[in-house]
Amino acid sequence: MMMLDEFNRSLFLLINGPAEPGAAMLLLARGCAAVLVLAVPLYLLLAWLRGGEGRRAPLLEAALACALGFALSAALGALWPQPRPFMVPLGHALMPHAATPSFPSNHLTGIWSVAFSLLLHGKQRRAGLWLALLGLPVAWARIYLGIHFPLDMVGAALVAAASAAVLHLVLPGLVSLLLPPVNAVYRWIFAPLIRRGWVAW
Image (tube, rainbow, N blue to C red; front, side, top):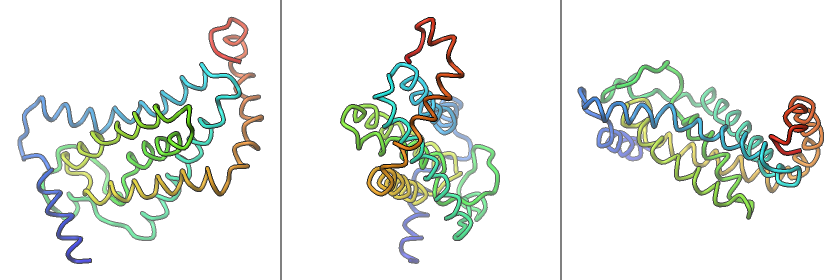
């Protein structure tokens, strides 16, 4: 355990940015850390609006996997709270962040829960692959900015994989149960746009 902790800290120091990084590098890292994650809900929303009822089950499953991932992440943080690098303190903190548990990374858990879930469906695999790759610069940025350790990202990947597997293999009936009422609510809210043909039925 001590060797793993030493490796985690050493790798963090290797990736973590300097005390005074260049303005362009800092802007890039902050953008990756905080903005790229928005691509996940944006994709789910646009794919839902453009796809018909038959294409929405994988999207709902991915959203549920994300919710489960966040729940597992919160449970791990409560049961085994790990400090963030700036709480140790170690390295340089280049972006303000609350002193919440570090393990696992919530941002990566959210991105990869959706990505891994979509990878389990043939017609959604390309989107799942792109979202999985999108998580890599987010992971780098959050380590570079000093608000996560590398093992926080490994933990996020494991939680995300478990969440996707549970929804797909253990609770497949949950999506079938929830899809009709979710579709009904969607059609009620978006009825004017559906009538105009701007979004799918």
